[in-house]
Image 1 (cartoon, rainbow, N blue to C red):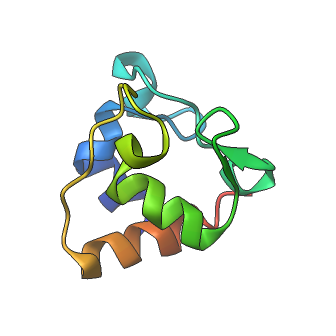
Image 2: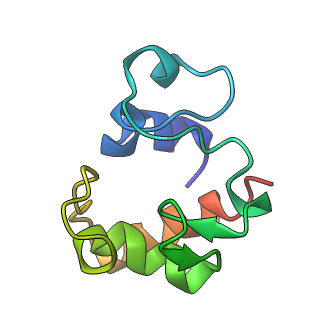
Length: 89
């Protein structure tokens, strides 16, 4: 997965990466420097690829009442999404 594919997917409406088309319509965080952060989900999890994957798959498990919906993507697509997101330093 690359930036273009991310921008075309469901996540584009929830998050931004730098100056992107998703910036104007997002309600989630700016992911530009995602992997430079120590934590995910406002401190609910330490920041690691495994925790990022788990958070995307089931955010409510880690932060009940969270506004972020579960992405409901296949394991393969989730692996590709995480592989892209961990490049955001």
